[in-house]
Length: 294
Image (cartoon, rainbow, N blue to C red):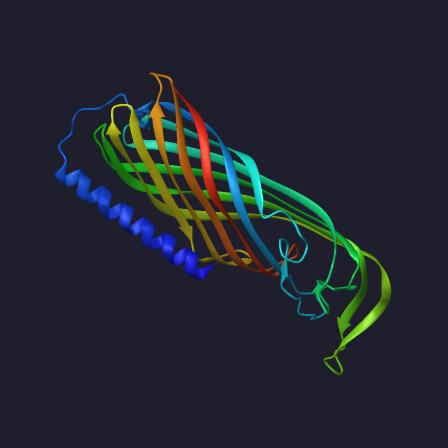
């Protein structure tokens, strides 16, 4: 995942340099009717996401959990199509608010084939049928300030908040285990029985980034942004990266269609009541959208 993030960050830098170069080398054509300069722009997209989810949960008694892949170990779908909503509101050409929402919900029942895997204080029984569910909702709200916006090209800063809600559920046959404080060994407290792990937690992360737009023609423009968080915050320590880009074609003064790409990546270590362990979650893929501008 770190390699992917490094490539994406390099892409942000390259896009930023190109936007800066374009602002100094291309004369303005006075294109003021492009969609990205309208007061309100609403985009509703179909998001074809490729998903990777890994979680490790340690128990309060000191049991170190095993990393569990929801796609490889629990057979949750690694490809989903979900709606993505993006709304931009402009106060004026240099100040705007950006809001987006995307949700991914998956569930599956499958036979568990690994040995010695613990989640919290549950040691899952090999061969048991485990019912798993993983839901996420991501809300993004960002304020954007544009250093440059002449109707043809735009470049500026983004600062905002990603609020992500996660819900993780696992149920199946397993034993309750703990660490013996006298010996440091893992011991079984209760034998095989129906067990469940259920955790819902919300991660509010402040982010900062860059955004830019460029009108290729009066009817077609490119827009992109990247936001990152890489600090310790509350019970979480890790990294969030969100990158998106899109080409939009205006059908008329109000409506348009477009094609884009979006990436969301989380790499977190947590030490809290809802999650004690590590969590990696990323999804990426193309988007196909319709837009309305007012």
